[in-house]
Each structure stands twice: as C-alpha cells, then as structure tokens.
Length: 98
Image (cartoon, rainbow, N blue to C red):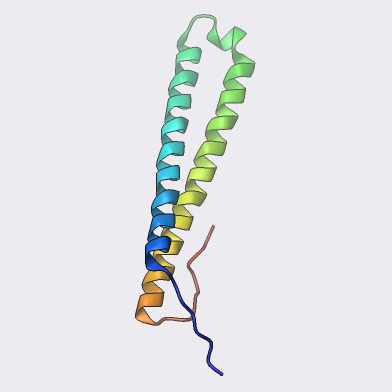
C-alpha cells in the first residue's frame, strides 16, 4: 500500500514568509538594542551606572539574534521541503538543520 503525501504549497510558502518576517523583525530589534547599548557605553556615566542594564540588554540582543537564526533556518527548510516535494524527492534529508 503506497503512502500519499500531500502538501498545501500556499500554506507552506505563507509559513516560510512568516518565519522570514519574524527573523527580520528580530534582527531589527537586536540592532536597536545594540545602538542603545553603544549609547549607554558612550555616555560619561554609562559604564559605571548602567553596567547591569547594559548586561541585561546585551542578553536580550543575543537571544533575539539566536531566535532570528532559527527563524531563518525554518524559512529555508520549509522552502527546501516544498521544492523537494514538487520535484518528487522523498528523502527529506537536510531540510531543518539548526
């Protein structure tokens, strides 16, 4: 008995675009946080009085960059899976590598 695999290409493409949009947003947030941190460091009292805030913001920035990377990987994996499905490739190897 053969197994039928179906895929809604429009839904997959929409999901992939959504992940890419999330990655772009997270990158923008990380860049904004980097700008804030640089501004705090550049101020006369920043390094002394805002050290904990700078550390906290840098942690958020790194987390945003990490999640953005995962979102980009999901986008690429979904697009590759869709392409492979259209071409009849059923090996499903290498689509979602984090």
